[in-house]
Amino acid sequence: MSARIVLSVLAAASLLLGLTSAVQSAREPHELDVGATPGSGDEAGSAPIAAGSGADLVRMVETSLTGARVYDLSFNGDGAAPAFEVKSYRDDKIWNTVVDAATRRIVRSAMVMPASDLHGEDQRSIDEFRRSNMALAEAIEIAEKYGPGRAISAGLHHTGGKLVFVVVVVSGGALKEIVIRPESLKRRGRRGTEYQPADSVSRAPS
Image (cartoon, rainbow, N blue to C red; front, side, top):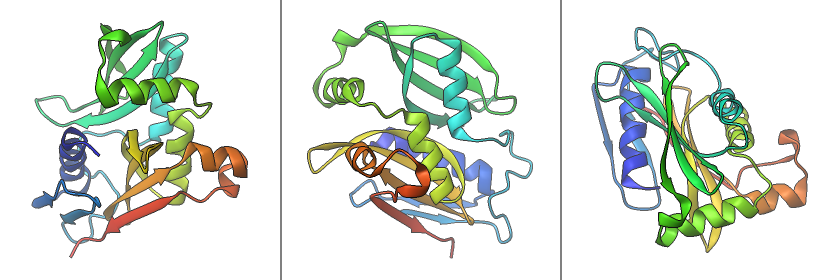
């Protein structure tokens, strides 16, 4: 998972869990170590983040941008209005949509670059994602059920040379990273009840 995603996850955790401190090592394997306020659990409390499934948020963006496929969801806690940033692929272009975290309403959507401007692993990830039949919303839905919890981050990653979806959920007062392998899902069936995520790493608050 990239450093940008890690920082977004920690920012979201600070708001969702009322953390006084949060430290994350960027080295793999990824393990999120947070210190939560006792009794904070999964509730947002006074944090300006509306309740709801991350999968529904992704589907909302895809509905607003006809033909778009969302491939990245991240939380941005900077500034006065925390928001989710949602990246999608549409008509050979990369789009960025900002969703207000408190109201879950779309603030703006804009085309940010042609997909041909992507390079390296970003280009490879998008190409493989386009060939995959699995939607990011489906991966998030599985992760939120398996967690169980609320997704605050999701995106593309490579492990063992294979494309996977990495979803971070807030579960039981901790952050849990869940890896979804599209190939395994295709082999075992598309019903979430029939599928076990490839990996899950979590760390409860001490």
